[in-house]
Image (tube, rainbow, N blue to C red; front, side):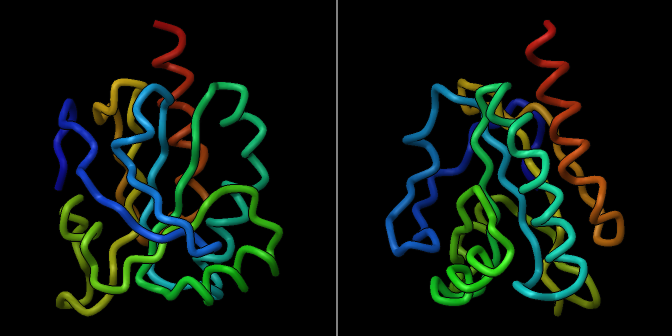
Length: 152
């Protein structure tokens, strides 16, 4: 898995609108990149809605939020619309980003991991939170890490 201080991997993925997003091009602003297993599952929906509900706080800290799973652009579009998500979801069907970020898989490698990465404005990893079960903590942990960075 990425180590603290490492740069955001050079990955380009399509968002829910079919637009290409190259993560390193977004340097200059803090970023939260979270990986989740699947659209419309109970835990993933709860996690996405936590990020949605806290998005104003992320914006106030100047941060962008990206959710990544292997679901299709169309699935992400439906998921984002249904739950009024106010951040971008990125489609990683070939697991390019999952591999670049070295996100661990669970259940004998069958299930995608649930990991949140927080990057500073220079694109350096400042925090990561890895918990498959504590879905309600990912947004809060990311906010705490960003607040600590801004306070320094």
